Image (tube, rainbow, N blue to C red; front, side):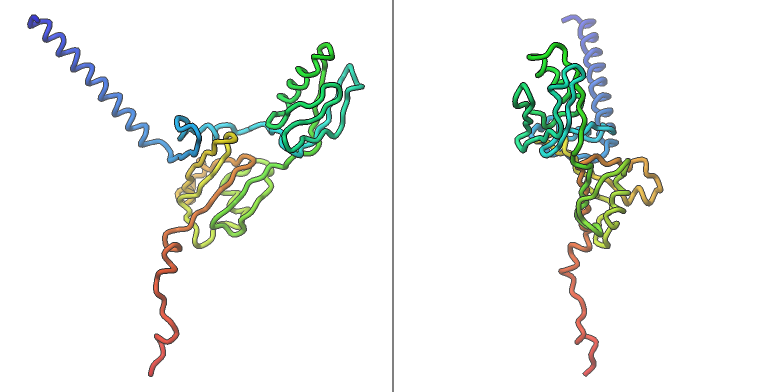
Length: 241
């Protein structure tokens, strides 16, 4: 190999290494600035994804026990009222039999019914009205004053939910509140929220809005975990002979 070719190859190798190092440093910086998020999933490649926390206005999905009406603009003989979703997610409909509807939003259900009834009707115009459904809720557990299930009305943040549940107990670890959110039937996301830092800074911009079905868990602080092992003076210690 000629000297000029060696110099060209060496310069190209140096430039390539510099690019790789720059990309590695940028990646390390991005990881260092990321929020602490953990995820439990049957798909490891999705772990850490914030997908469960991005949708602010999720649509309600039908579940077992929900009740709805359907009406046909041009074929009222197929109208049905108080259709109840069975435990297996199916409903029985006039003219077409059983259809699985659990897990669908109202627009998705409307599209499903139009497809099903298109087998016996020409371009059916169908309206769906929910009559009875599970009210939005959240669950508060751990070191809060009143653990339990609470109705979720309007926009409610994590710190507001903690206040609704009686606030923190003395044994609570304010800096590691866990927010669990079900993304799918086999995937639950978990995010650590530092409420202590938010209160200290007076900045609630990172205070997340709750979604229906969310569960917040407040763990015990370190002192409360070891309190049982700390010796305490008994009455006899202060008695004089």
